[in-house]
Image (spheres, rainbow, N blue to C red):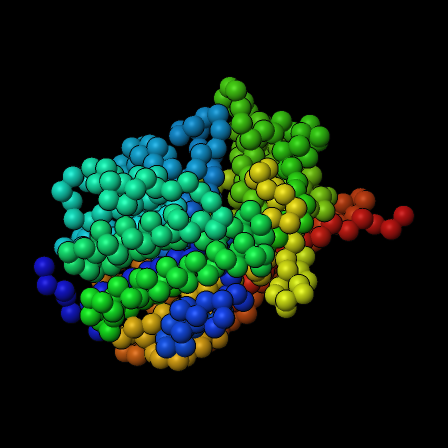
Length: 503
């Protein structure tokens, strides 16, 4: 099918994700390829992840252009009794995706993805990921001869491609830090196999680094820096392939990360804290939870709490315990209880959202190399320890991530200070492709970055919310800072404190 006339000039569009990349680590020395792309295009200097600042949440945002309350994906790990009554599940797992679609009539992700919209126009797509999150961009089953291939680390679509790809490139490598072998494999899968005959209209490459190494060693460590260099080499490979094919000048490229990163200061255990307060809370059950039982789902810097029966009294008691805990940063509730923020304030109030959501506390300093050093409480993943990396809080280093755009439709040599976010990537690409979604998206077109006509920008608005609750022995106070552009909300930071009263 002939490429339709678009608002932009590009024939091809490529999205590259560096999982967990922070903007302060982009430099000519460490990331020469990305830095050069940034200098030749647009650098979004105030770019934002969506909270929860986790991979599956932002992977879905980067696939759909809507916030979690509309996409239905609220965390990396969630609890839904209809999918598994005894324990949380990984929202990116193929089994959960298939079960979720079965239960919802194909609406596990509740809105179409960009890849699906492009395919609906008769155009080809290709998705290759060194992590399973790539599946969320294009998850639907397809026949063996389908023209829109997907590799998502744990398998392929069409499934018949699995043997062909592993015979060609070898078995998908075991994880290692830096996770270079997996990222090389995924890059070759896209550029050599999926692009073999022709370049698709839209391609996605999801790299596993520097997330993997930062988790195991911490941001800024030699291992994490080596992982960043590896990502830069993968980007160089992709750009060189576009040059070899003679299509670099016809291709719009966007390089983003799904979230930023912090460092674990200490580990916590929300479930144990609640059990000590006589609230029956567990992450895994041997029989179905009963009324007033609580399923705690750790996601690193945030914990999701699901109350069986949704008793207001139990939820109120949970909140009171958490408000008197120094490791708590910000508390969200469906009902917007006193001293909390409602989930709708962070666009998380979906039908499958938890009853209570806690973002861990954080504190920021500067390390010896001049990079921000944010210490957070890890409340979810026991395999990580103090000094390792983590995210999913409302710290500035978790919420701010990278975004670079270059190609015929983007301005050259521009640094934009205007707030932007992952939620804006799909609306911008759809605008350039001249595709209109069936319903309006949550993000905006990044007009400030484009050379052609685009929706006008309105003033940037600053916002701050505070909530407080007084106890006999002290008081709890939390805040949330955000900015808004054209009605799109970008979270800047949020934290809280428990202050005992002087005796």
